[in-house]
Amino acid sequence: MSRNTLANGVWPTAVTPFRDDGTIDIQALKALIDYYAQAGVAGVFGVCQSSEMFYLNRQERNELAEATMEAADGKIPVILSGHVSDGFDDQVDELTAMADLNPKAVVLVTNRIAAADEDDDIWFDNLEKLVSQLPDDIPLGFYECPYPYKRLFTPELLARCAQTGRYSFLKDTCCDPDQITARLTAVKGTRLKLYNANAPTLLGSLRAGAAGYSGVMANFHPHLYVSLCRDWVIDDERAERLMDFLGLASVIELQCYPVNAKYHLNLEGVPFGLTTRSRNPESFMKYHRLEVEQLHRLAARFR
Image (cartoon, rainbow, N blue to C red; front, side, top):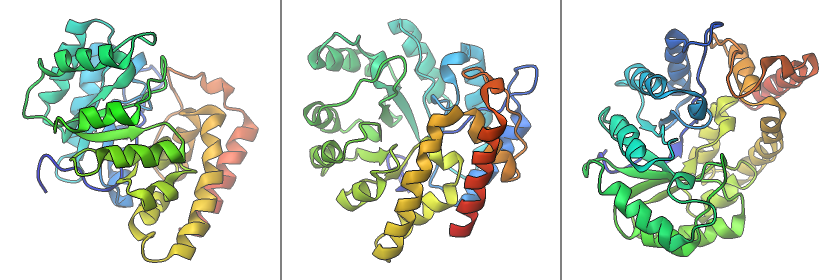
């Protein structure tokens, strides 16, 4: 596969395992990458919001990126973000550090490129300035991260970016079937591929031409998302049944994420502690655990 081409399918947003003292657990990370690979995913999206990148300092983000690349080496492709800074020079530095690790793509966070009250022309000008400072041989992508604010593409702006030929990945978080269809029309014939982050709209987006899924629920049952993205064209009735389950099951991401995902990964045999920086693990109540356990058993029936 060309370095400029990302595989269709599932790109989980990797969660970060922490030890009880708050440091990154590299051994658990290796087990997580192995779990993703065994599930048959297309690749891994590392150092993203699910990875708690806004709660990691620069050194920790680099450490996490390096460990993810090392764990995935030879088994699974990796794309990286770590794009959290406000200042231009800091953004150049942090993105260049990710590019130096030679991932399949470096992913830019759309809300880092302009302020919420700045229009798309300013945003695009800022983007061009930023990208001009990055290595020109590394594919780039976009992530419509909801924190600290959600900056969504219009189809027109997305087409403008896609037509430059510089971008290969969009983690789409608009959660709107009509907008997804419009975006797919906007990027048709370019190298930019759309990966839907929203489970309930996933099957419809695949039918419309989306390349796959890149969302938090791939930390709960990646096997089922792999099956849907791979086989929906073969058995439409089965795909509908699976989509009904996945869409409804995805409401659990509103529960206590990423603590609940880490608990679920333990049920899958991945040795994760529940320590996180973005959520207090003590807010993960006993009834939350029961909900995750029940979901785990139900998902196993579909598998």
